Length: 343
Image (cartoon, rainbow, N blue to C red; front, side, top):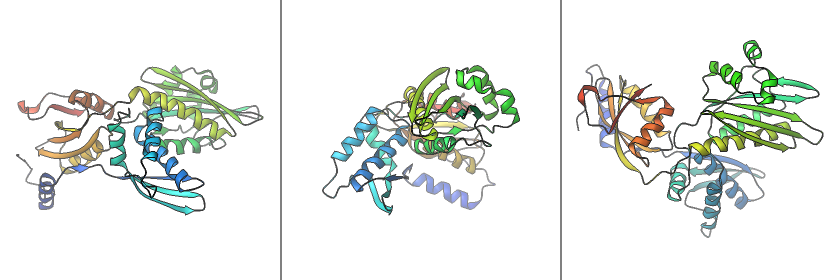
């Protein structure tokens, strides 16, 4: 295995690279933490498992919920399962749980559960709140009766980026509340360009005598996904409607990973060791990549050995969502299965 380094690299970098070459793969084994309010430990475990699996899969689906039931049925005599590391009560009725993300990903893969394996799309939320006969465009300046905070919590639980507009003069000139209420998507997609979003969510929340109603239109990849919900308050209704939309978007992106294998991917435009580290960190954050380790580092390019459950072409297509496009092998090198560069 060859390793070409620029002479300006310090000795510490050389040692670091040597360790990378000799060490086992850098596996994305992190701890996933959930907090739930429950009556007892068994209920906390079930709710925490559901939150953890939904977060890893990127959507709430029947196959995901089936895995929760299966794992709960497989508990040992002490009430624990293999994927659970720790459960403790942090205050009365509130439990903190820690799960091994790598093991839970394996549970999803082995059961053939579809999951979002690539970058999750960032959707900009255009939201209007109807209250007391007035319509408010929500954003940094107008939080809206807990609507945006509820959506921020949902985004964190789903590990899915939701973006919120500034609600400044530029937004108010470009966006009409009537477009959001009426589901008119074209001007709202145009106005979202300043935020570099992958799509938009049009959310209309209306307070009623008995609570609140919410209607949502998620627009991604040229498709509209509509949902609605009612709840006791505006925040809960908004969360429920948007969660349904996110499930519909994710359902089209979800794939079933196979047994992981090692493939060699080449990347151009990697000028130094720091860029290589950033690249590897970015890759192992993807659900499709179980691990990534250095194969060789050259002048401005790198070859990585990537452990993935996708075919090489499918992985390359998936990486387009992270900004990578296919490119010709530099200097007629064919040591990698495919060469990629920033689009």
